[in-house]
Length: 71
Image (cartoon, rainbow, N blue to C red):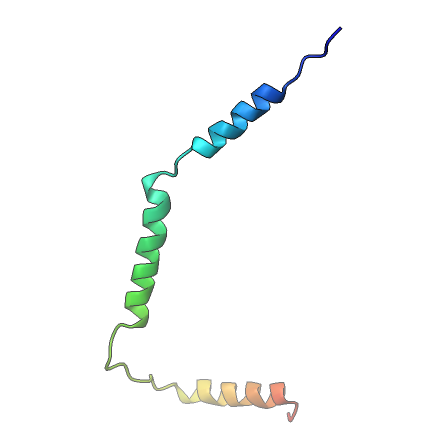
């Protein structure tokens, strides 16, 4: 008595997976996202540093002293 083998079905499934194609948006979305991020990063040449409110500056200095261990 011979046992039935599922090997042909597994091989066919593997071949089917290899033949699947990506949808158009699987490539388009990362390209659009990368392009948008690149535009944002390289954007304005005349960007200036924003002035921080005095309370925020004091808080950041306090946090920096705490992190350095010299509270």
